[in-house]
Length: 325
Length: 280
Image 1 (tube, helix red, strand yellow):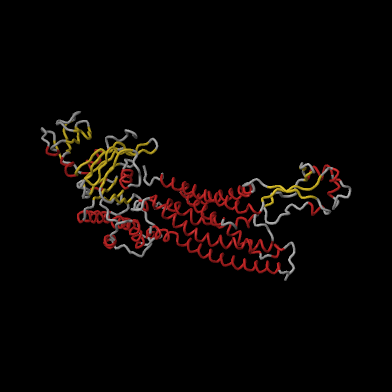
Image 2: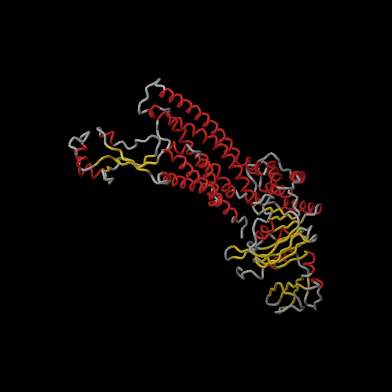
């Protein structure tokens, strides 16, 4: 194993060194930003400063950049760590050399992958820990839900499992295509696909809950779509109206069919909504207490992808011919 | 199996519908330089890869004693590694490693240790690859067309040094080539592959002593019993290459003449007749 550690270091030392430096810089920046946000949140809580509803606008802008960078780093791990492991060896035709030594092809793959997985695991743990802390401080100050978008992906140790999964995807893409550029294209396509699919799929990991928000005097207040803090709102745009029997009615049906005057008026002076038995709006959401389960599900998916991708790489290596028939 | 370096029994390798090696059986003697000859696509690289354990056979068995090291046709090296790092690679990747042997080999050919392999000439890269192969102290060293990019002088030096290594150790070298001229003065033992099957196998001196060229008037059959390896006819003359017990000493009636043949003649004669038979 020492030999494979030496070989992996010798062949991948620049990506390793650069990644370690980037990890250290990001971790320090995230820690400093989290401390700054924590202090600002504490000031708000103590009413030292006036903190309005638009607190997120006054939050340090690099906080979201930092969380986003952690969310996107796994694709760079795939490109600069995973892909070259096999694709570069295929391109430079050095696999017959490596695999004809006492270390066979499967031990070679296992050893080198283990070294890279360990390094990505260590760096990923550092960054994931820092990003979890940052996401919580960001939530504490801005009140933005931890269950949504970047904050969700930066939390729950997702950056760690995502980095491991995409390291394996990079290795598998390199093994399957045997070309660096082709493997990078495959990784990019898969990454974009994953991004699109996960935004849709994440909402449906568990059956969403529904809540009826009855009207108060102000129409704008009554139409609030996200009344619960730290949840995942599944109601985008205008939520449907709900009647006293629980039936739902689309915004189009109510505002353009039954009560067009509401488009102009700020409230419902004629009682149009009441006359149609509309009692409020309906929203769907995932409650905050499911966040751990959601992180668990997505971490499980990442680790599943990690295993499947490594099996693909293993299979490709096993059936690779190193001779000309 | 002390006198046999490698023994194959009914060995076969199929790539989809194409048999690169089929029904191949052989016992190669130990501590010899074995010339493995065949046309392109005859199955030489496939046989060597199976012997080196990097390609599983489709059928049959292969047995050998000790360590097998393969230096493949492309003689790959890590281009960014210095020569010294290539030796480190060999040391780290092998359970047995003789650094001094590898250094000695490089020293003989004055290869600079600190230069990246990518900046060495083709011939120097071959020497580095050979040094890594020899440093692993193989009992069976498989060299797949190793001399192709060497100039004639370097080729003679390398073969000379290889023969010295064989003489100084218990190593067996299998040297594959399709360049018949490379064989002169190198091989003790000849193994000839044709279209994935063994066509000829034996000690070079014995094989040469068993073959003769018979030249005489135009006839359809040679005047003595024996295996006709090849036959050429002109309007007035026939030339047969035959395999008999006495070879060039075969007694023939005048005007027939029996003459010895060269190793190149022997190899070409066995390669030529079956050409055009198609794949297996």
